[in-house]
Length: 464
Ligand SMILES: Cc1cc2nc3c(=O)[nH]c(=O)nc-3n(C[C@H](O)[C@H](O)[C@H](O)COP(=O)(O)OP(=O)(O)OC[C@H]3O[C@@H](n4cnc5c(N)ncnc54)[C@H](O)[C@@H]3O)c2cc1C
Image 1 (cartoon, rainbow, N blue to C red):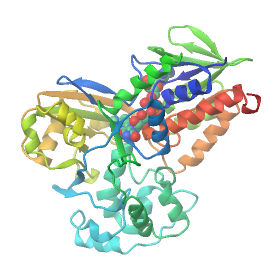
Image 2 (image 1 turned 60 degrees about the vertical axis):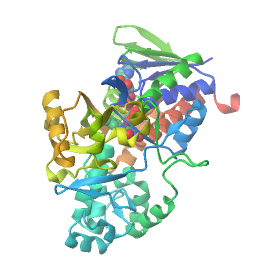
Image 3 (image 1 turned 45 degrees about the horizontal axis):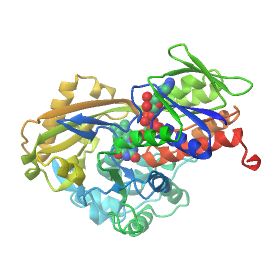
Image 4 (image 1 turned 135 degrees about the vertical axis):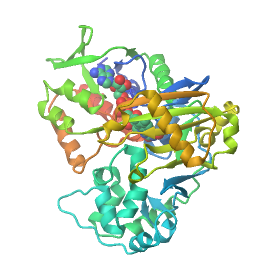
């Protein structure tokens, strides 16, 4: 039986291990911290476990559906509440029928945008660009004017990437819109078509899972569920093991660990964030390492407050709100977790959990302050947004240093070059958020694809 090491116990690494186990390989997951899950993590706040990292996944993506079915999980839908944008000091409902902020009908932006800005957005202009990529912000600004970028696209992208719309690649981040722009078609019509398609209910039906899916107990429970299943199938999951070196030999790979131990494996999948993967590939694939280092990361912090249950009456009936960066606030989004996730509201009717996130790409200064200051700033702005709130009974500050890779223009080509370089090495592959999408389904997909690539080299399908 072939033995494969998976370096990194985030959702990409665990999905890699799951796929390898199903293919019949012996698997060892090596995770440097004391627990698996990476950005999927729950922590006890005021006596209940709540997500302090990722909190939902796109439920209808095939990668999610497959893993959920294989693990026999019951996903839960968030409450059908609207979201809002806290813009120019007012809470505005999130316009309907937009695709990553691209409007299907400019009139729907009224309120969030001024009359002049709406008028400009109604006059869609063609998007021109050189080369084979353009930033999301540049494309939308050319088409609909700067206000659509600043007040809608930017907060939406900030929520997903902690990024800057005028830096992030349209091709990598919103490929549906990239194809539209490249073919010279109307973005507005594409957004209208997409919202007609999405008009199927967001909630789960008998045939369809919810658009956004969570797990009772938090999406951060998924890693341990996977570990239990992996270990039951014979896989080894080792935490507290940092892999520091990776050397090919004639039969496979020698892995060096931080404690000086070394171990041989037939194949390896590196499922760590870009900078760690670059360090591990430095000796064997220096060009890939250099390319990986060019992917920049944004850091962020998630601050979760547990308020007394009476706060429920004070919060607007919405799942949370986004904040455009140009308004100069410290927070970029807030989620009213107890309203958004009915299981949490029912589990703790005596409390209301709400969280805010801070930290944007290239704004490291915003996070260089003590936890207590971040928590106080977040609370002050939350109060400015929703009105006076009592003191929280508990607060949790979680910093996600280098939490999210930024897909700059040209990212798709960059990833193709990294993969080409890694493909020159035998029996090794890479997976994770740095490559084909930062969302959980994309990370699941990249892990499973990496597992298949390495397994195919070890035991070609035509020899099985
Ligand atoms: C705050 C936050 C909220 C998010 N919310 C959502 C959301 O709601 N929905 C969504 O779809 N996505 C969300 N994302 C994005 C998504 O969660 C991540 O992109 C994804 O989980 C990354 O998975 P990964 O396995 O690639 O990497 P990681 O989760 O970073 O896992 C990599 C693992 O490798 C380990 N490691 C690193 N170096 C070594 C080494 N040398 N040896 C051994 N182990 C090592 C790390 O400790 C880590 O556990 C969010 C991200 C953040 C930061």
